[in-house]
Image (tube, rainbow, N blue to C red; front, side, top):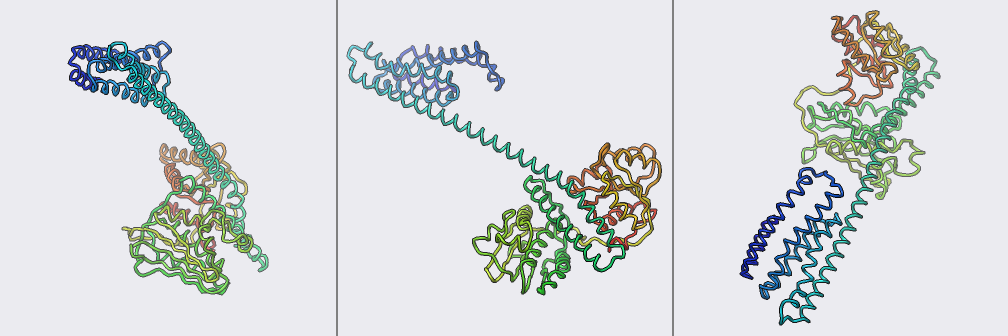
Length: 567
């Protein structure tokens, strides 16, 4: 680029001055450019190259020499080119100064090495006229020199200020990046903490809910059964709160994944009606959950998350409505999007509080938590889930007249005819022999009690290594494998069992994972290890029985009994 500019400048100089010295200048420019290319080759080959002190001096000297030769044409233009030459001579070093200043402002030594020759040429041109031209206008040249000096002063002040601003911007950017890194670390630490606490909290909660299920199968006096029901309901409330906190953590960490499958919205509406009808009846509320005819058929969606949104809205509506009605309508809007609309005749919300409803841990009034309970997470999670599906949620409310929540979900029709519906209750069948790998004594007692009530023969082990050795010794119809265990975890134990089966030709033993970690990527990991199913903790007996029957479907010495499991 410099050589091309030199040719243009040289052509202009030759036209203005008619001087053969122009050709000598062009040759000198070409020679210094070639020298500079040779000296700076290591820097151009490797952008991360850092020169030592001697190499730096050579580079600076090369820059100064290049500028001296490049701007040497200006005296010739000034002395031989008349008025046009004066203008031409002023523009060449002025433009060169700006170019060097912009390119080298972050490197002070390079800045001074490149700018100094240009500046000297610019200031010395009027002095050159006074010395060489006998009829030079001394006063006029003095004004030119002063103007050139002022130009240089303004240029250098601008460069220095720009450099200071650039340094400040770099520092601010560095601080912002450091703050972002700290925030990411804090978020990761929080997510890890919640995941760890989830596992630790679910272990005793599994004991509470598991033993409550076991006691429910025993004959109990009415008063004791009522007390047991309080324990069960309280445990389920704790489980809901725990799941809400984990959902928030997953959403913040962008780890919440949608599990898309065919969903029948008519079935979803019927399930919601059945689930909330007893609670609504206990408050003497009229409840209606309807799906429009145009929603018939299968829709591609995450059934769990769509159900979670609808159930959150219905739970809030029923909880806050003391009299009147709660109605949920599912239909298509004009754009073909699925709409879930839940209306109630509750106390309503003041307009200035509507936006706050969707903030985490925030409720309509300070007294709401004391009067109705709840964590203030349901609506926040519902909005996040709706947006994760490409939709959104909005609220309208009139104090004293009720509220309406509208969810827009841009779902697509599903190709597959099968739909996701309620799990079928397992059939009553004969007993089987099961190996359980579980390190927690409370969970061992829960599993032994629940499975014993079903007539299942159970052998307990405390870690993956013990499970592998016990499996070697005797045949089992099924293995229930905890994932997180000391000595050898459930995944390693499963892989080892599958390796031995492959090496010895032994028949495959179905393995069902018992774990508090049941996100989509976990399920993939469990399947890759060779597991045949997953049951999330805290254990719900009907779901455990269902997973055991699914795992046993290919090899059944006697499926699990489910008559009491469904109770």
